[in-house]
Picture 1 (spheres, rainbow, N blue to C red):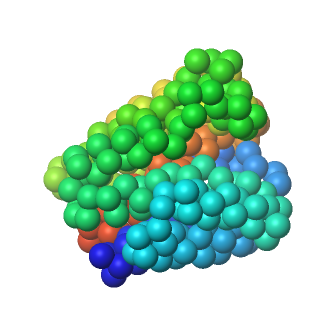
Picture 2: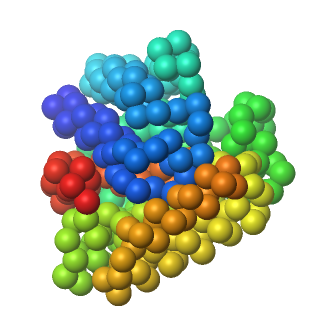
Amino acid sequence: MRSELTLFSRSLVRGAFMELYLTPKPGLVDLNDSGSHRDLSVPLMEASLSVVSGYLHRVSASLAAGEELAQQVRLGVEAERAMLEEAGTNCHRGYIFLSGLLLCASARIGRRDEEALSAAVARLAGELFDPADDSGSNGSRARDAYRAGGIRGEALRGLPALFGEALPAFRREMAAGGNQGSATFAMLGRLMASVEDTTALHRCGRQGLETVRKDGATLECLVAQRADFMAFLAERNAYYVSRNLTMGGVADMLALSFAWLSHTGELELRSAASV
């Protein structure tokens, strides 16, 4: 069990780095620029991910030792604090929660079964979430203002954006004759079109979320048509920056998608850096 948890924790770290380096991504930090995040950069994100790496290693060890869920929650709180101290930002706060949740759920089922894992995530999220979320985060405020599910709704439903949207999109593109590069952007487009992104809502309201969703649908079509989707993404990045629009929820789910595909062996390590 420990070796499997260790392998999965490494895949979860790898997935976050793959998401960071995937370029271009509208409104998000990538190898071209900082998108709509003037306070962030690739080196700063890498420093944040070094904290995430240590956190996931500790969680996998805690799970292997049979410790209580409360201990894994404490490790998450400690990681958030360390991230702020190390990088001065909470940029991976959502990913700390989601990756830890997925790792803990994986330990409960002990096998690579996506349907069972999704159900385990939902059960675990039900144990974790207080009915009254008063965290005061941007995401919780956006959920209240727009009655959106956000990361909490995703978790309680077993991460449908991952298992029901992103992974099938990647696999459909591969089955249709695409390569890992085109399949990666098909996956990004599907996530943009489907995730109820509270970061976009917080920044730009319903109009911002609808922009992300519309652009995701367009990206999917361009990939399927073998059209120049890279030029489209570069143009949309300029627009997002001009509107201060971004999509943190999409980024988190994309990182989880990279992680799972890496863990299953469907995604080679070089693919995300070479597209």
